[in-house]
Image (cartoon, rainbow, N blue to C red; front, side, top):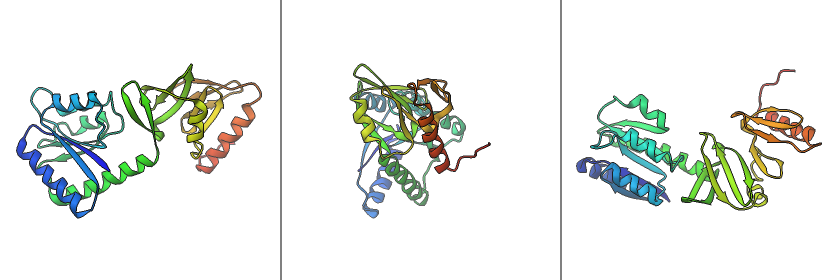
Length: 245
């Protein structure tokens, strides 16, 4: 099921979008549920309470706070929602991508372009779900896109997930269980009992530490350097990375 949120202060525009969503759901036999919000305050309150839409249609020009600023606040709680900005002005088009916009659509949206947009964004949502991790954290339940996870460390009984954007998400659980769940993904490596890393973000491997691209140092236990280097080289070779000898 795809969860969609729509935020627009113009009731006419909101109703037209609901009609398009209903038609798409019926004609494509797609499981879709959607919730309408009429102001920036409403959508932000919903996000803070724990609603996690897969897709958010967000008007840019609204009273009180524009959609770009709203999206910036939402990103503090949710990195994965696909944000589609709706507006009658191209003024904020470039700025919209600074908050990770999926798309920027001019109003009014024609039916054909809406269908194409929905086909694309739903396909991407489904792909992301296949490569995501659901965990319990302080704010409730959060889904982590695995391609954006740089590394995870455990301190005490707390798992700290270090994300691509610099955010750190706290969760509870066992590193052993986490490694078991992610064993099917070839890009994850456990170089140390307290760390699990995404090899896509490795910058350097020395005899005593792995340096990630954000300069975080992951310790390498004594005697494991060669094993880790070989594992990384196998992974890089399979990914057809360029080598210079």
